[in-house]
Image 1 (tube, rainbow, N blue to C red):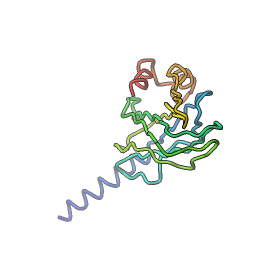
Image 2 (cartoon, one colour):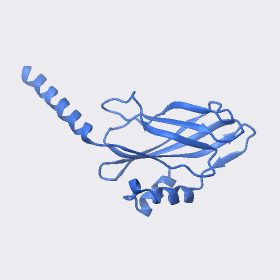
Image 3 (spheres, one colour):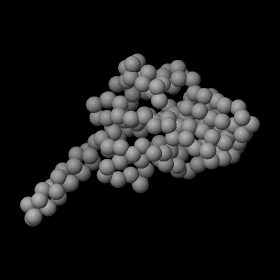
Image 4 (cartoon, rainbow, N blue to C red):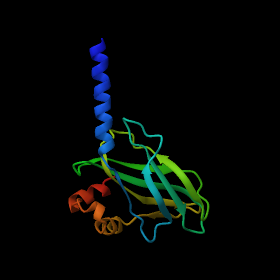
Length: 162
């Protein structure tokens, strides 16, 4: 029993050390015409050993109220392979020029994520008008970021499938 307990402790310590050494990169892709600007994107303090829970801070850039919006997050592992993609959707009223200090969007998965990308993918104004991100704009901006130089055109197209 002592050997089993010791083995579990050693594995837990080793796993924590390995995960602690993996520096994560959080990249924000803000389009010029997006009604919402992402101000901060990173790991939530609520995340634990087995999961990544993303925290996003953003603001309404417009003078119009927004009734729904989607923020797309794409996650890549240490080998630059796509792990997962999530589209966090909120239907909480976002008033004109309002800033949300922190909202958690749910990617709960293995915590071997190395690189994460976030962008606003859709917005619905209170009057019913819908704005959607131009995926070509997302590709253009992301393609110019050194942190995302590992992404090929095919890997970038995986974003569109989300």
